[in-house]
Amino acid sequence: MRDHIIGEDYKLWDIVTDGPLATLNKNAEGVDVAKTRVDCTVEDLRKWEKNAISKKWLVCGLGPDEYNGIQGCTTAKQIWDTLQVAHEVTPQVKISRGTLLYSQYESFYMKEGDTI
Image (cartoon, rainbow, N blue to C red):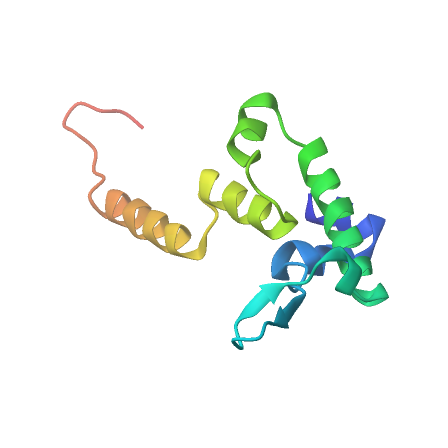
């Protein structure tokens, strides 16, 4: 998937991994709130356009079961993070699986009467 998206546009993969970099403004109380479409600059709109393209590429590669799991996601990064967790590709899971496999390997032995 990564290579396919990068082949389409190299910047799209940045959107998938980092997000579209939220476009925020400070309101009267000094709290960050999302910009309205009228307040967005051309650059902001370009980021959200790339997010939409990234989402399209990610969704097109999914089956119906996977699609049901990501329907509520609004950004390509959210979709990618959800898919990583669903397919256990997060770094913590990789380490845990490696440790488990190593301990299974260490405890593996031939039983009496087994042949190679």
